[in-house]
Amino acid sequence: MKILYAGSPEQSAAVLKNLASFDSCGSERLEIVGVLTNPPSAKGRHGDLTPTPVAAVAEELGIPVLTPAHLDSAAREQVAALNPDILVCFAYGRIFGPKFMALFEKGGINLHPSLLPKYRGCAPVQAAILACEKETGITVQRIAQEMDSGDILIQEKRVLDGTENAESFLNRVGDEGAGLLKQALDMIASGNDSGVPQKNEDATYCTMLKKEDGAIDWTMPARRIDAQIRAFYPWPLAFTQGDCNGTMTTLRIHEATVYDGNLPDGASDAEPGTVLAADKKLGILIQTGDGVLAVKKLQWQAKKAMNSTDFMNGTRNFVGTRCTKE
Image (cartoon, rainbow, N blue to C red; front, side):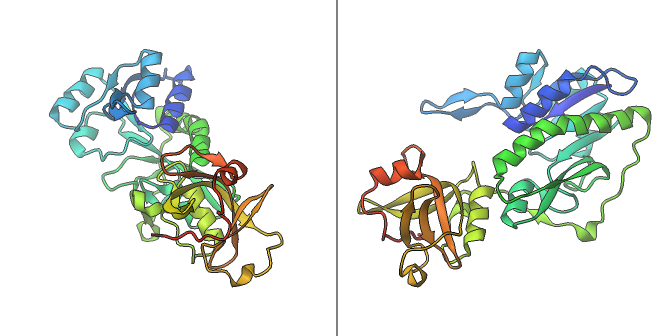
């Protein structure tokens, strides 16, 4: 079975590397004949063009790499020349049209990090964490014309314990996803690939993340702000405006937790966003609309991220100031 693999980010690269390590798929040999990924993007101070993590892994493995800007007729010709049997996708970020899918005799499968039909779309992990879900999952589904609507071949639940962030959960998908894809490919190779149709009436959707989504509203409960910080790490990162030695500056928060210890006198009367104290073990305590948030790792704009102790050593009189959304 000849596979064209489509994906771009780091976690998708991990799936590609693991998938390539399997020697066989059912009774047929698994062969990744090419990789479809986004074009190189400008990064760093000098804007050097950098290939995607998936492209980098493919080049290491000696797999041909296709980086079309559009899935047009020229791109379809490139894919057809590889003569693939099936498309396998994880985090490619584009819609595959009917002309493109016609290139694959056995169709395509997609790895999606949610319990479909819940959280269809491009940011399902972030959406589940932001909603304080107790569980989410990993689904392998048939690629269909409507986004994330194809029949489900494999679906497994994963517990959310309230400590994970988007990066750590997606890393887990990167580690586990290839095994689930191989199971699905085995099913297809053996002809035992009848999937379970999704109930469209139960579908929910998540939208593309925007930088402004990270703005913290301190009138929200501490557990909601904690979820926002975890959902938006490492991008777009939750942020607020804070007093940096007398100047209001953007402050990005990387890590925090809901504080359940004893509070300083008068803390219950403080306005949301007020910096109450600095706990050497748990972090910088900030009042919210309901409860207190303990910030453990944070970063002033244009500065490096640091733990709360180092931050307080460099930010005079931060306790008593007030963080704001704007």
